[in-house]
Structures are given as C-alpha cells and as structure tokens.
Image (spheres, rainbow, N blue to C red):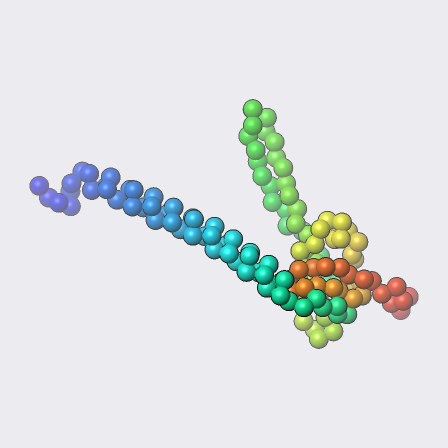
Length: 132
C-alpha cells in the first residue's frame, strides 16, 4: 500500500486547514480590536490641539449590507464621512466625521481645527476670512 496514495490522507489534512484558517481569522479580529484600543488610548494620551487649517477635500465611504430575513430582501448601507484638512505647515490629515459635521464643511473653508490624536473634535470657521 503506497502511503502517498492512502485514500484517507486527504481527510486528515482538512481539519488542519480549517484550524489554520480559524486561527488566522480570530488572530485578525483580535489584532483589529487591539489596534483600535491602542489607537483610542493613544488619542486619550494625545494633547488636544487647536490649529489653523483649511478643508482640502471631502469623501464618503459607503458600504452596503444585504440582510436576508423572512424572504424580504433588505439592503442597508452605512456611510462614513471623511474630511482632509491641510495645516499651515503643508501637512495633511484625514479625519472621520459624523454626517452632521460633514455637511457643515465645504472645501476651501478656513478655520481652527480642534483634534486629539486621530480624533476629530471640532472645526471653528473663521467668520472674517469669508470676505477675502
């Protein structure tokens, strides 16, 4: 009997592959969770900064989720809003905003950006700069 041609060798390898995939998936999830916590803690420890900035660009990221419940095809989509600000130094930073905040900003707006680490806090538009 040729050991490489044993009919059940394939069946021995399948659980191993499933095990490996399982570990990778769980590892990835844990990594994301720890990453998120790490970023959150970094933000907590970061100083709150208020710096002059200009709204450079705005973008939305729409992800669709299809739910199949009781034969009703329901598609829900969630939108994430991002705004890129440019500082006087020429550096740019992109922040995740709420839809409400996003709607208040226009490209080219100048003002003072309030942020903490990668967390957007607020943007105070310069009233006087509107006329120039």
